Amino acid sequence: MRGRIALALLLAAFALVAAIGLRNARADPLVREAAIALPDWPPGARPVRVALLSDLHLGNLATDEARLARVVAIVNARRPDVVLIAGDMLAGNDDATARALAMPVARILRGLRAPLGVYAVFGNHDEAGGGAVPRALARAGLSATENIAVRAGPLGLGLSGDTAAGTARLGPVFLGLDKLRRTRPLASVFVTHSPDLVQFLPADHALLLAGHTHCGQIVLPVIGPLLNVSRTNGNRYRCGLVHDGGRIVVVSAGIGTSNLPLRFGAPPDLWLLTLGPGVRSSR
Image 1 (cartoon, rainbow, N blue to C red):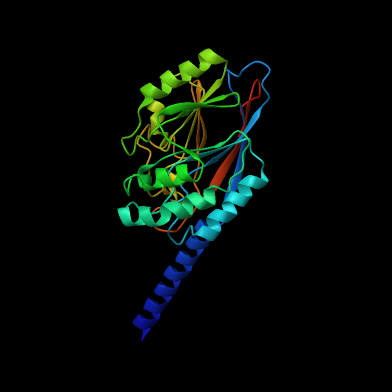
Image 2 (tube, rainbow, N blue to C red; image 1 turned 60 degrees about the vertical axis):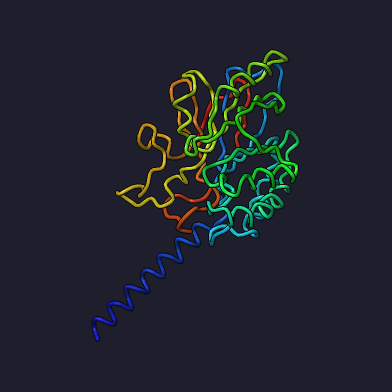
């Protein structure tokens, strides 16, 4: 009898923990803000507000279509000038999931509003389905490509492939930025999925925006994160705004989860960055 009671209590405790973790994972994302000065800011250009999203992971209990639509509304309410999506649109990474969810995620993201554009790069969960996700986003009118450079107002966006998926090709990105800069001045910003790209950037490069790590997703007191998916410099690029010599790396916790739809100690978030000249970097 006592054994049955103990088992029932244990199962109830597990159910309670899972319910709390799922609630945490489905919560509205925190909106983290920072002002960042870029040394190559074009003279006379006004500051630009950039929304950074990552790891939407549509398709499991953490992110359904209604929650993703709510996130889009949260972003639009902040009235950013540019929206950047740092990869991993879907929760699964199999062909059937990619083909089934590519159009729904594109339809919802089409609702994002930003006068200087919405730009997406891809993560390791976006490779399945024979390019279904990139095609769906492009058909929805979003700028969804990688390993190129594009201009967005005073910004030169270096849209890179993902080191985790082996798709990063920085050569074309650098060449593209140089070509854009010859036309008129710009401030360069790199966007990618995994922050591990930082190891391949020049030491004086100003800003890298990324996701992938989920900020650990399950981070326990004393123990810390159960899993570290950033392989560069230990946990240095696990989460948040990281000053790295002459560089600044911003790593979002993301919106969804890829495996267990649970979060502890690493709430979902998005970033609203004010980029401009002579603005002191701040958390």
